[in-house]
Image (cartoon, rainbow, N blue to C red; front, top):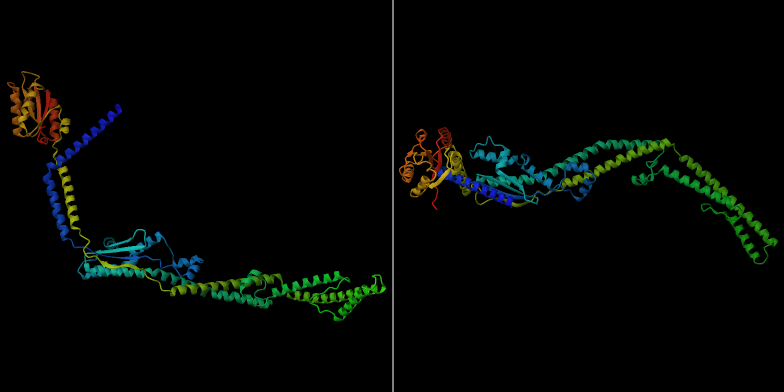
Length: 569
């Protein structure tokens, strides 16, 4: 509860102090209202003259869409996606950061310097001195270039006091922007084409040399381009019609292996069954005899027992003839095997020759592939170069506003008046402070060495007698014999001093009243009463009075304040 009361009292105290400060500030301004009025009036006159003598400022505007004209066609896009280095030559970018970069470039002299030169030339013809003009100052004060929020639409505004210059300038700006829109694309494509042409010129002799080396080495060693390469390399070389020693060697080896397998199968067959080699021509005579024996054996087996001598004889004939046929087949297979082995031996090359030939062929094919890829890229870039780029689209034509955008006379006059009031108030406070006069009763309470006995209205002297009577019978009634001193503090108005002295004398009756600011004269009195008013004494005077009263030592009853601003209740 106590804490709550303390907090409330602090809040009330702070509120009273703020109220007193504002009241003192208002009083200071009212005391120097003439100065404030003079300064504000002067500012009003000057701002009015400025507003009506300043040249009108005209404005032209247009809007343009910042499209990304660097986007290539679909074929070129696929090519650039697989070749980042080539894409870097052309240049690419997107997003907000790219738009901000574009805006900065469009504000720079690299794009607008010709427009600036045109404005300078026009101003010179009009008789203006533009010798000290700088592009940065001109762009900052005359141009406004901003992106519409959340879009790629660029809003451009140009201001100038010369009305007939607005449309030509913004028309040149729009054309400069449209020309710039395809400049980087063209420059990038030219660089890419030049780079590819240089690479083709540089690599073509190297590719020809590597191909000649591979061909010469192959001819010297009876090897084709494909010889020594793996199946994957042969499959991607694209030269399927060319003969290959390696293929022939593989075929010969496969034939040798097949003949050896057939020969083994024929040996296993023996006299039990006839082995047939598909690639051999059958012996018609032997096969005819075998078929005749088979027919006779089948016929007799149906009539006779298996143990019959005639059947046994036919079986022996069949086995003998089967063995003869198989032996004849094996002889033919051995002949073919020897031929295949001889062919395989003729196709073999030293391992070192194959390895070197492989290296030469791979180098030649790699160089040939590189040249082919560069030529494809060059063709794509040349097609992209031939494609006509579209300039940025103007979504609003360059337009001159119907009325000037500046000066705003009402705004200038209002600001001038406001500035005059502020300056006048500041000057009033400075002057009030420099006078050193004390107007606040709170300050007087601090500076005077005795208590405030009565706060009287200076404009109601008829009410003073009651206060004088209370003083005479109260604080001044300390001695019935001694005189009472009334000391005016500062330049108290003489009429107020005389009137208050008269009222106090009437209240004192026969007792002597000494009215004087001479402390030596008032020192013989029994007690002293100070009389002052707001703004009649300086801080220095009050400080000196306080010191003198302390040295004097005569008792002080208190002080009376005659306040012209105090209202009677």
